Amino acid sequence: MRKIRFAGWSLVVIGTLAWAAFSIADPSSAPPEQSTHLDRLPLVQLFARSSFPDFLAKAAETGLRSDEVDPGTLYPDTGSHTAIEAGKARDAERPLATFSLLSDIHVQKSDIESQKMFVKALQDHYSIKPDADMLILNGDLTNGLQEDFDTLRTLLDQNRHAPVQATMGNHEYYRMWLHGDHYDYRSLGAAWSSMQAVDQFTRFFSYDKPYHETSVRGIPFLFMSGEAYRDVDETIGEDAYLSEEQLDWLDERLAAHQAAGRLQTVADGESSETGAEAGTTKTSPLLPALVFLHQPLPGTLPGSTIERSVVQHERLRAILDKYPFAVLFSGHTHWDLATTEQVWQGAFAAVGSASVRLVYGTDNQPLDPVKSESLVVVVYPSRIVVQGLDHGDGSRIGEKKIISLDNPKKQSRVAGDSPR
Image 1 (spheres, rainbow, N blue to C red):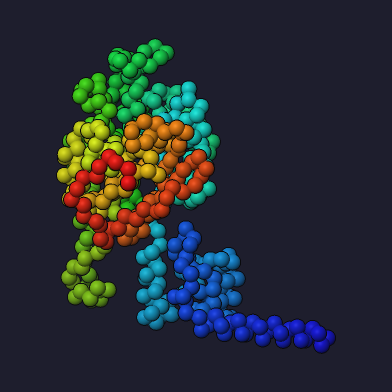
Image 2 (image 1 turned 180 degrees about the horizontal axis):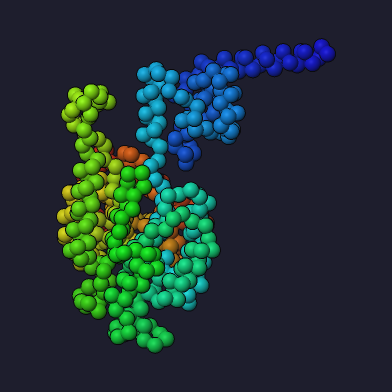
């Protein structure tokens, strides 16, 4: 009995001393958060910020992991100015959206390797973020045949992934090169057309048009596609042909986002967090607008000046130049994320996503050994975090790239086509 009592009192004393040590600890001295959940805090910091009984009760209620917790569930609004401001800061740092970005998957029924690579990419992304908001396939999904689209459908049905959105690439028109049972890239066949290719793509994804919009927590996702190929105009080549209707649509959607987000009216009799008088307007931070097009805008990313890439590139650039909150995501070049700088910031921002099927070097030739790459993108209120993935071993490619939306870098020079 004495041994039991002694052991019990020892535990109480040890627990009390430990709690006292934690209580006087400076939370700011704790190691920075290393988890991909940037809105969470190490458990030791919670001991330093909460009473022991409250901590135990709340830990039991929320089912805490041993290494991290959600601060939003443990720090209720106590009414103190410090607690309120800390809560606002944590809310501002929570991700608004997370999505996987895959381009140039080039799935074909006749190409088993393309299927294996696409499946591996799907598995990698799902293992990293099973609750991602979106899986975006940014062009060159197939080689244009119906059997390729059928194969893509089967692979998507057989593997877990986030909800899919997609754009058309130049390879979605490649059924035009089919002559009988083989491809001949010296001349277009007469059995297929741009109109049929667009119809095939839109029916597959149940889109009304080859361009469309969706949103996630106030962030617009604007998906653009080239609308015609060489049968309409030989000079189009492999570039994206964007109609005036599509370009006007993009301009209008970006302008609407700007108008909706920039000014908010302070209702009469209410106080403004920024100190504005009731009934006046105040500036509100703009969330980014994300634009997706298979081909890059020339003069932005490395590899983007090898071709014209976009027939109406001057008009597209003039539109994007007006909206510093816009970010253009593209594929097409296949250029390696590990050896070239595929994030660019000027009047707007641009991001390249290499290729899942075949990655190219700076000589614009496929790498040997073959590589497979894609991106994970996390959107915060004031920044976008871009992380490359190598699907050969599932590893991350280099350091995360940060696109700042508060203080975008202004670059007067055009990005060259040389490795960083």
